[in-house]
Length: 141
Image 1 (cartoon, rainbow, N blue to C red):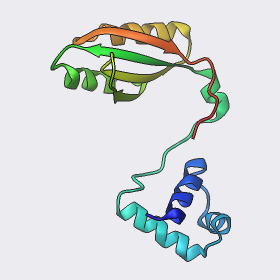
Image 2 (image 1 turned 120 degrees about the horizontal axis):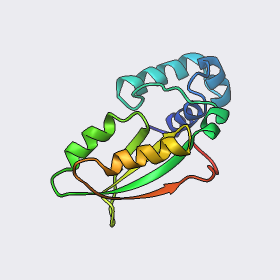
Image 3 (image 1 turned 30 degrees about the vertical axis):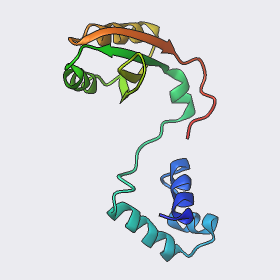
Image 4 (image 1 turned 135 degrees about the vertical axis):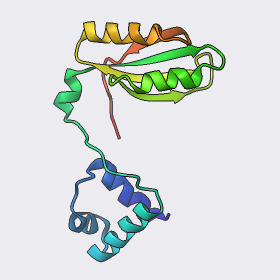
């Protein structure tokens, strides 16, 4: 990967549905050059797929939180599998520090968020949770 590939990926992060011709104009490249770079990035696995990005209005209507989890020894795989089945859990990461994992979660309202956090805390293998509700997103790439 070179700087042009990085710029191309940045453009795609902003709008994955941008036409190749638009990407080429923005990068000062030919359409065929951009198309072949995209194909190479896809074949090599750098681009694994394209995803839906929800509107700011839809995102703003949802309540978002980060839930730090302390997990019993040797229970990480089971907890991960259980969290993966919960549609409100958008991302799960293992982290260093006092917590073992951090889950990014979303819900339609306060009651739903409370129920989701309770459901996470009740999972077999979860010793403790600590939640932080997102008040505002300053930027999102």
